[in-house]
Structures are given as C-alpha cells and as structure tokens.
Length: 474
Image (tube, rainbow, N blue to C red; front, side, top):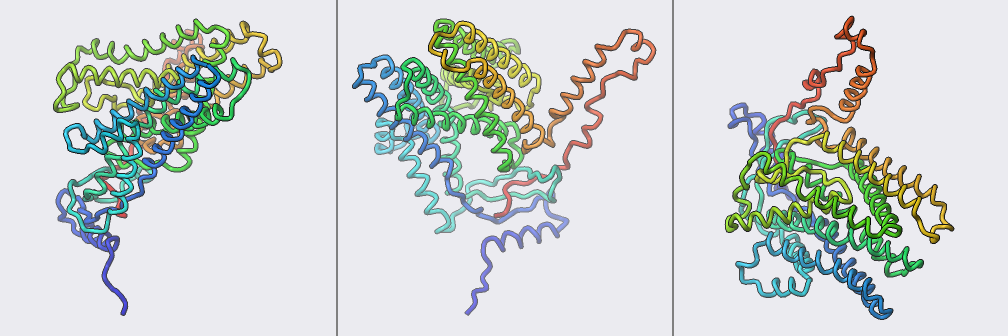
C-alpha cells in the first residue's frame, strides 16, 4: 500500500505557499514549520584533523631534534606546539561553559590536550541522534535572503531545534580555535621549520610534512577569519559562499601568506637581529591601533561580553583579542577592523581605505625586505638564481592582491550591498589623478568638465530590494 503521508519538506512548502497566499499574514512574515535539515559537522572534523596532524608531526619532529641534540629547534618546536594547544583547550572550555558543570571526563581530556577530539565525538553523536525524535524548537531564526540582489518574497522564520543549536555551538567554537591554531601556532611553526631547513641545508621528511600541514592550517584559518568577518558584518543576512568565491579566497590567502613568510625567513637568514625588530614593530602597531582609536573616541568598555566578567576580566579578554588581531595582521589581512567599544568588537562598515593602506604598506615592506636580503645574502645562495627569486616573490604578492580585488568585485556574497566597490574606487582614483594633472586654466574655463564623478549617484542601482528571511526551507 502506497504511503501518502507528506514528509517534512512537503509540509514546509505547503505552509510557505499558504502563508504567501494570505495577504493578511502578520507583518508579511511567513512562519516556516521546519525543523531544518541538520548538516554534517564537516568543519569540526576538518579542524580536529588538522589539530591532531600538526600536534603529532610536531611531537615526532621534537623527538628527532632531541636525538640529534638540537636543543634550540626542539624547544621552539615544542613551544609553538603547546602554546596554541593550551589556548585551544581554554577556548573550547570557555565557549561550552564547562567549568560550572559536572563533566570530569571532558575536563580531563582537555588537560591531556585532547579536548578537540572529545568535542568532535560529541558533535558526531549529536548529528547521528538528530532527527530520530521530534524535538521542540529552542529559538526562531530570522535573516534576510539574497539572490542576485533581489528579495524572494515575504520574510521567512524558521524554528531551530536543540540538535541544530548544539551543532552550531560546536561549529562556532571550532572556527575560533582554527584561527587561534593557525596564527598562534602554525604560522610561527612554519616560519621556524623553514628557517631551520635553510640553516641546516637539508629537508627532513617529517619537517616537510609539518610545514605542509602548517601551511594548510594557516590558509584554512585565514579563510575562516574572512568568512567570520563577512558573517559578523552582515549578521542580518543569510550569507552563502559559492565555490568560485572559496577558490578565489584560497588563491588570495595562499599567495599572500606564502610570500610573507618566505620574505621574513629569507630576511632573517641574513639580518637575524633586524627581523626581530620588524616583527615587534608590526606587533606593537597592530596591537595598540585599536586601543588608540578606543581612547581617542573616549569610549567605554563594552558590556555583556560575559556576565560574570568584571572590568578587569573584560580588559584581559580585549587584550587577548587584540593580540590575536595583531598576530593575524603580521602575516595577512585580518579582514576586520576592531572596535573595542562595540559589543561584537568589530566595525560593521567595511573601510576600503584601511584595506588599501594595509596592502600598499605591506607590499612596500615586503619589497624592502627582499631587496635588503638580496644585497646582504650569504654564500649559501650562490647556487640559487636570486634575482629570479626576488621577482617571483614580488609577482606572487601582486597576484595575491589581484585575487583579493577579484573576490571583492565579483565573488563577495554581499557585494551588491556595498555602497561602492573596487571598480568605483579605481574609477574615482583615476579621475582624481586626471584632475590633478590638468592645468589650472582648464579648471577655470570648465570647472565641471573635469569634476570627479559622484560615486553615490548610482547607489540606487546597486542597492538591493531585500526582504526579510531566515533559513531556507530545506
């Protein structure tokens, strides 16, 4: 006998169609009765895999350094392995609020630096049990859906169940640990191992494996950082990244990070003391920049970052956030500007000027460091075509900037919400330069002929007619 019982997807579509047909629906909002499809926690699995692979490779390499009495390499390798690991355990414990709960096994696993493994197992258990029993929703999610810059009709609201909410907490926690692991562990680890390879003039298979894993971890952390920045800035919208956008971001971030680390390592092999000065200068500039802006505005500390935090605790958390922000910007663009007076700690309006200034100064710094290395290089590089290497580094960073511009112009999921995009900025810049190059007499005779175009004139064409939505019915 054929089963004519409608499934959950059919129920969702029927409710949506009936609500859309009813012009008297409250505020034009469609209530979607949809315990939406729970997606597998692939990001949790991937972050856990990277954490375990890097930890194991670093441990094996440290034991090899111990056997060959390379005390310096061993100590630094262990340091760059344990420091991000401890911070990862603290982050997972803080996000899941386990200190006030009776979970001795989980806390013990965190003490053994195996917290990501037990968290990953918890996420898999939640995913496997999801959908077996009908569970009441714990919240209603509502966002704005974008498609080709136009609204899709009335707003949608969707019920979020317990399982989906638990998986969302796991995903958010692992996204943050991925950024910490990438820029407080993998980045210095990759820099150290590349420097050791050049100094010792040979490549260990284990060291090569660790460098490859570290590079993958850094690129993944940079991707997570960029996606988090987009989600925070456009929190009211349902953001969907297309495969072309991810590919463009991978090329952008991979070239940017690889070029930056290679430049620093090459410079450190020639002028070791000066590279410390360069690193500390970058660290202090990016660390104190948000605080200087905070004090200049005479703002107050944000409230409700954590209910049990005093002002001292809030200040400590903000210092840790700014330290991570500084470490990210030493090697690549952080994709956000911190606002310590805001509850989300991030400026919602993107500033193209900050992006342009960062990449201009970083390009000049990389070129300067590369040229200095070229003139003061040691005899070790006599069998290497150093001029070609210099050109390759400059070209690779230029390609990274080009892919960054392509992403913001064509692949950014919310590019239609920009007041002006990369094309507008370049057009205005060219017009401004053309105006400055004209003689003063031309401006006196035809002052309006060479006036720069008003970028805001075509904002209406770029703005989207956006309608409220939340989660697309599965």
